[in-house]
Amino acid sequence: MSFLIDVQGTLIDDMDKKPIEGAIAFISHLNSAKIPYVVVTNNTKIPSIEFHQFLCDLGFDIPKNNYLDPFMSLEKILHVKDIQSFGADEFLAVMEKLGYNQKAVKPEAIVIASKKDFDSEAYASMIEAVMGGAKIVGMHATSIYAKDKRRYPGVGAILQMLAYATGMGYEIVGKPSEPFYNEALRLLNTQHDGITFHDVTMISDDAIGDLVGAKKLGMKTILVLSGKCKSENEVLHIKEYLDAIVPTIGHAKG
Image (cartoon, rainbow, N blue to C red):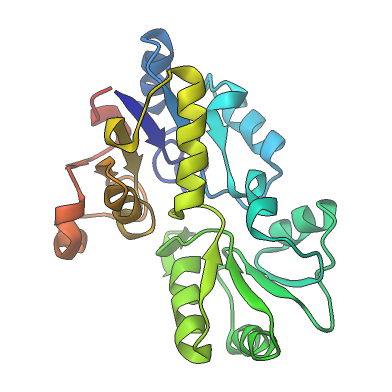
């Protein structure tokens, strides 16, 4: 038994960023029982080291080797520096720290992260860059972006829109890309050798953006209703990809 565990909406609340009921106890149980796990977040607003420390400061005892986010896998997907970035100001600031030229006149890639107020001008800029030869890279492929008690199109939805508009494909850095899940599996195997995807249970609040991809790789899946998804009725069309649906991670069996 081993776990991959989402953060926003699963371990911490999307609104106040505080631990969800039962979340700290669940991680503590995994630690004490020596059950392998990796916290896999699509965080794109805070540098990896800082976000890991933020979780620890909230009371989660998560070893560094048990944490993975898209910034830690970015160089494996994005091999160029001349890009255009689209996302929240915090994301743009982290990308600047990482040394990317985000205002390239002739970008080799566009890189997209979550933002609640993308407008038609932003979408036009994305399309024009792709038509000019830039490849499309999503920091992740969330189906929905939950912010301020509302739900907006996630990066995954935007990627599919751009693919339809331009006829071009795209690459994904974080969840639910297979390379990202493979890196998480590698980290699990540093804790206990011989783990395969069939030994892993993925827990998340994003049925489409996280769990469908996990299930296709052979993982068991648990959807929590403490984040993006509010009711079982919202996921009836993909219920075959879900092994269990629980109110919060505190109701999951570790």
